[in-house]
Length: 63
Image (cartoon, rainbow, N blue to C red; front, side, top):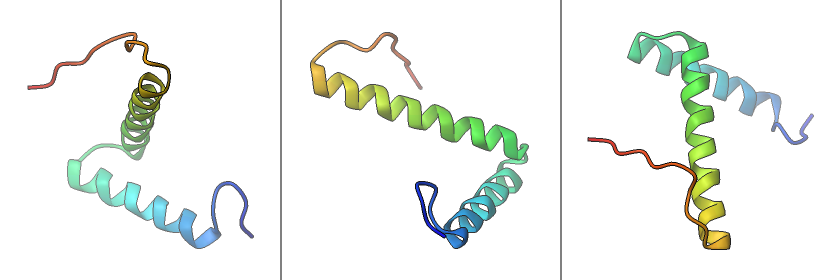
């Protein structure tokens, strides 16, 4: 049982990791999933910028 989403053991580990993050940050698992999605999208945008030399659509300044 593999496929593009990994093995059942990998999925279980990912689920457990999300639950631990939710507990540590005292947020819902859905918020953890949103954080992960945002990081993925930010990484994708950076990779696209490096690939085609275009400026990103938006900038985020973190202090």
